[in-house]
Image 1 (cartoon, rainbow, N blue to C red):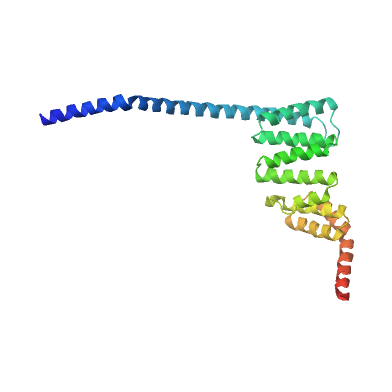
Image 2: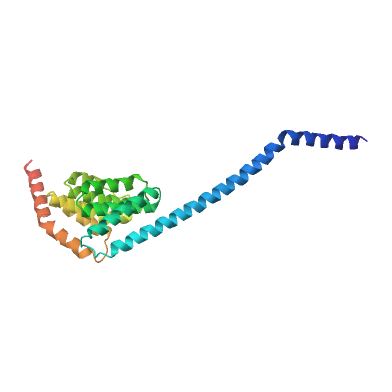
Length: 233
C-alpha cells in the first residue's frame, strides 16, 4: 500500500512539475531547433555569397587579362571594372574577395594617375585584417605608391621588416631602390646584398646583381670616406 501511494505521489509530483515547467521545456526544444535551423541557413547563405563573390572576381580577372600587361586599359573597360570592383568590395567587404576587389581598384587608380586613391584602397586592405601573405604584398604595393607620389621616407618606413619571411628579399630589394632614389648608394648596396642573401627567384637574380654592381663603386667610396673621417678624428 505504501509503495502504491509512493508511486501515486511520484505521478502527482511529475504532473505538477510538467504543469509548471513543461511549457518551458517545449519552448527550449523549439528554440534549439530554431537555432540549428538558423545556423544552417546562415552557413548556406555564407557559402552562396562566397561562391557569388568568387565567380564575380573571376569574371573581373578574365576581363583584365584580355588587355596585355603594360598596355593602357580601354576607357570603357576600365569604367566597367571600376564599377563592378567597387560593388564587389561593398558586398564582400569581410571576405578575401572584397580585399582582392580593393587591390584591383588600387591598380585602376594607379593607371589613371590617382596615387592618393590607390593608397586609400591599399590602406583599406591592410585595415581589413588580411592574412600575412596578402598583408605583406599589399604593404609592398603601398610603399611603391608612396614612393611614386614623392613620400620616399614613408615608403622606407613600411619596408623595414617584412611580416612574412618569404617577402624578405622583396622588401630588401625595394629598400635598395628607395635608398638609391635618395642618392644613398651605400645603404642601397647593403639592402641589395641582403636581398641576394635572402634568395630571389632565379629569373630576378640578374637584374638584382646589376643593381648591386651599379651602386658598388659608390658604396666603396662612401665606406672609404667614412673610414678616413674617423681616422682624422
